[in-house]
Image 1 (cartoon, rainbow over the protein chains, first blue to last red):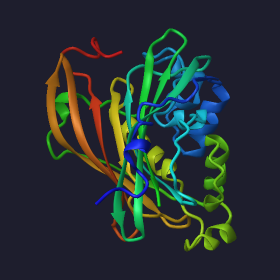
Image 2 (cartoon, helix red, strand yellow):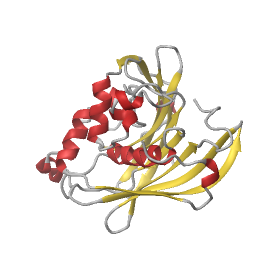
Image 3 (spheres, helix red, strand yellow):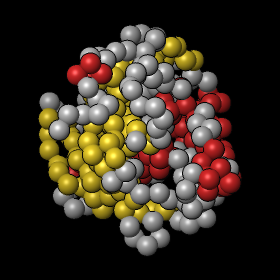
Length: 149
Length: 150
């Protein structure tokens, strides 16, 4: 059966990227994030304690990138109204993110598909977001699945 | 810093956690502020109920953060969380505990790194897995401590 929303034309948007955006990592923002998730790991909370570790400074907890407000590529679908759900994320970590880093965030639509659910057609979007530091090192890659129905 | 675990200490089946969390509406507000996710279903009960929800619900990303916490505690200072995956299958509400747990599913060496793959999940007070996931962690070896880790 032909897809209702994810047409061949719509799938041409795969590969579309967002504008890159640069975010400056503040020590206080890392600490507030760690406090909000109630993670008392000294690496995320105390510059004094973190300096005694092999990192030599505080680092950001794994999902801190969530606070950088990653831009989403503009996906055009002929859905009059829809509800959105966060389906989940897959993260890969390469280099620690530290206070003072300038992280450039860019997202790319890597998959767009449709399937029939109980509530009618459901559209699944997979967006890959890359977080790169001021030295050009890729720190984190996140793949998120969004559901529209 | 918690006690460091080494590659030699881990076998397939080794349990991770449990890490118990007791999220409150206040925590959801703090998380909204810290993450910038101000979708009202996470702190405005009327809004949530107007969207056919039983009340405010936890951010999926907060549950992701709880599983991140579980894994960075497990990896310790000398380990490194290499991959983390989560799927949001069920809703969780504040005022009731959630528990993050996991177990080692594979132990191997690749490119000189000591790696363990883990099955992880968040379960509610009834023991239902609302947020299944997976993780890969690099661990130090007692023989060559962290030489190859970043």
